[in-house]
Length: 143
Image (cartoon, rainbow, N blue to C red; front, side, top):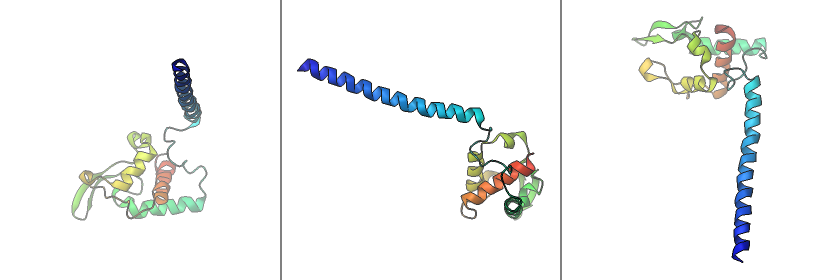
């Protein structure tokens, strides 16, 4: 009886271990496939390659309305005075910003950076609007 219980316990433990390994290797192979085909900022929507002219125009309007006041129409940023406070807006065309993961980029827009003078837009813009702004920045300002 004790031997049977040990065998059942060992078989059960091995089955669980194999299931965990199998699940891990499946997602791992998908991840490696994704890594082989994805761009560095794969978390974000693909830049304007698939965007229609109307969609890109709407994204540009969102950028101009919400971002250009500090980051300028060309995305270069720099020193600007907003509501009596002088800030140094980030250059969205810099290599650093080009390499920024789109999820991080979206979080920065949502949460803002009070120390840098960047307001939070989470209560003003939807996730879709934020993604559209990122698409515009990637396709038009960072090209």
